[in-house]
Amino acid sequence: MASAAQKPAAKRVRKSMSAEDALLLAKPQPMPDRARFIGGSDAAAVLGVSEWMTPLELFQKKTGTAPPEKPNPRLDSIRRAGTELEPHILRLLLAKLRDQGLEVELLARNERYVDLQHPFLGCEIDFELRLTGVVQINGDDVTFDGEHINGDCKSSQGFWRWKWGAEGTDDVPIAYAAQFMHGLGITGRQWCIVAALIGLHDVAIFWVRNDPETIEAMRAKEVDFWENHVQTKVEPDPVKFSDIRALFPQDNGKTFEATPEVADMVRQVEQLQKKVASAEEQIEALKVSIGEYMGDALRLTVQGRDSVTFKTQRTVRINHHALRRQHPSLAALFEETVETRVMRFSRR
Image: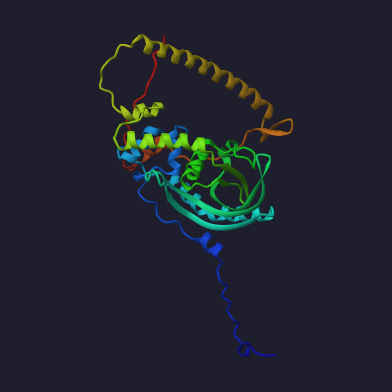
């Protein structure tokens, strides 16, 4: 038997990386200055359907008039996680499509495009595929014959899960739909496939089709926003109360007498507040009864389907009062004064 010294050295085999693997592992390039164009993630804000940003807030970002953003490590962490998850989501999608008998070729990742007619409209497409085969979309068979399509990676877990419809449809959250349609309008392609992460090892597949009428209406709003607001520095109309506070962050100490129209608005708010208070009392009473029935149970089902969870959660918080009491100088280092205007209605 040959000794260890007499054994031939093992031959190291270098496996060549496929073009697909190279694309999956490619790092996205740094984003250009977003103040110079309207991107896909801006589309929902322009249309007024974004949950994160109003048209006025987007205008302030594009014109450099927005207040400085405070550091948000948690949000930064979520964004990094989303970027890092993209290759994993894409691998799951490719495997799932091939398991369904489709021919799939990964063509590109994170490519950027500029609209030929309006160069201030741009988009970045998460990935692009060439697809061949038959897919059921919204209950109908759709045949792809080597078609070049857009693709996007999203997460639909946790709170966001209920905003997505049935897999195999175009029922995606409206803010995302605006983003995908914006990209289809710029690239001119007919389909955007959306891979939504629904678990560690699974994705749900959704399909958004190019709708020329919708794209035309969106484009008109985007062009108007850019040319008549961003370029002219004319603020768009406020759509949320947060916009009012952004426009008028400080009071001037004056008193205004309400016009009949404004007085009627005040009465409407007061009446609605009373209804809200009454509804909150009813909700509280119902929750007490439901809680008594559940006791220490985790989950309540209705006709066998999950309906209510009463789960123990653990949250770590800083006891600010104790910190100020025991270490006042340390607490003072991290305290800051924040000013905001609060609208209150006098009880009558």
